[in-house]
Length: 480
Image 1: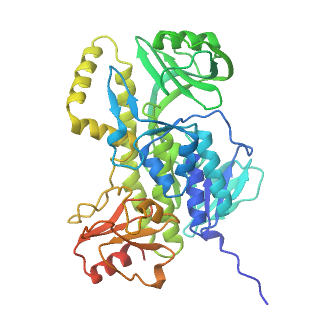
Image 2: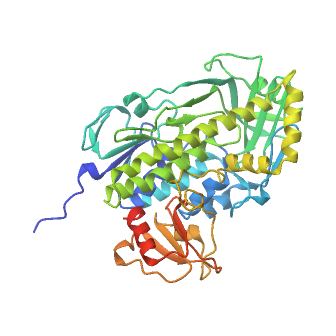
Image 3: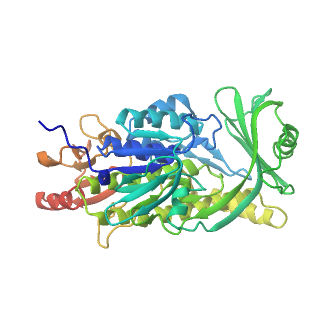
């Protein structure tokens, strides 16, 4: 008797890069039953030298749909107010989300949870595997790996950071510029505990940021406008102390730096996130200043947008045209993040004649609630929506919050497993054929809208007083 037939190589996805974006994407695909190989050029270790430090509401919602948000909430520390500059404070208590805060948590804690999920789902991890190039044809992609045999897959996703080998291999430029040069990083112990969970301020030519790791150390990010030196220039603790004192008024008794470095912060975005069967996500597609803490969050949402679409196409539930929507939906969001993070850092570092202009803007923002709400929506990610066809229901393309469902459930619990969720006012039999990718739920209220929610938590279709035939057509078009 013959044994089981192995899945063809072209049904596989290769993800390059094991940061948060790559781990979420690979885990999603494996949960959906797609064979996944994750290539990482570094040895197998999760570094405690974290770059990102916060999870915003929309990223937490995506993690909630994967049953890991509560675990991360137990590790991190919530921050209900964001202090920007000139007394401008954003109160997150009114966010239309289950997560009405920013979660202060080092990136490596997020990576630990996402790596465990990916391993449990069956992702094939290959560390110390450096991609040196790739070629693609009508049927798939061949990936060349240093010192190893070529690998073949139906699709490849580059989540390999700012210096992406995948982006270089497909010939995409990375236009932009350095926004801030000679930024200093240090992980230090503090003799004096800061008054707030996150401490940040800009005074004159100096800026400094402090955030806790949770293990006794704090990350310091600081910058002085007058010190523009190459990244390879050594850093000493006296320099970190001096800039911190200028920006924050004191250095909190900094000592025992376990790591120090210098880097420059760029603003760049690839003109396209796809070339044929190869995609870019996270820092491989866009990088920006750390202002607002949006980097890791934007990458996680890239992954959540792309993963279900790749799974649907590879399982034959959607045509390859669906993959075109990744560019259409995520590229504008990346561009918006570049603009908003750049605006924050430029306003924070205003000097001279710019200061009164900033003061006027802050006063206006304090008085204009809709503008303030829009800024909060952009920073936290809950304010973005995707394009919808002309004449579609107003909900189509909108992010759907964590709705209460009949029987005491929640929408983001129902989304787990990478499924669509059909929320109806009454009974509806979707049939046996879609049980693996569609859950049917009902409103906890008497609302009459029928709503089809995509696996990434955005509305695919909605209608008032929908007939069974209308619902059937919507399911055929979106769920397959």
